[in-house]
Amino acid sequence: MLYCINEAEIVKYPTAATGKFNPEALEYDLTGWFSREITRKDRSVYRPDPLDANVIEVHQCKGHYCDT
Image (tube, rainbow, N blue to C red; front, top):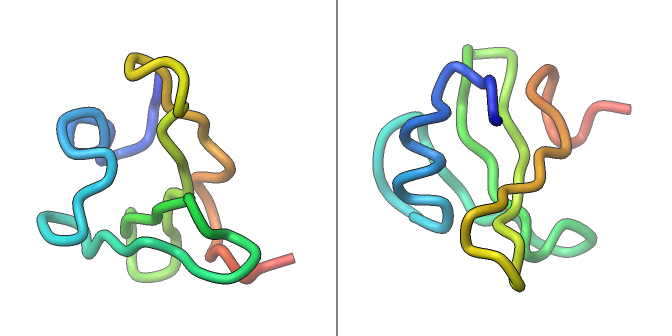
C-alpha cells in the first residue's frame, strides 16, 4: 500500500499530466516515472507497473527527484 499524502490521487490518476499536487512526467534517466508534490520541498516519485495495473512502484516520498 502506498502511504504518501497524495495516495488517492496517484492511485486514481497514476499517469495524469494534470491534476492535483502538480503532477509531472519525468524525463531523461527517469523516463516512465512521475512525480507529485507532497509539500513545497518534498515530492513523491513513482511509476505504474507496466505488467500489473494494480501496482505502483514508489521510488521516494521525501526530497526532490534530483536530490542525492
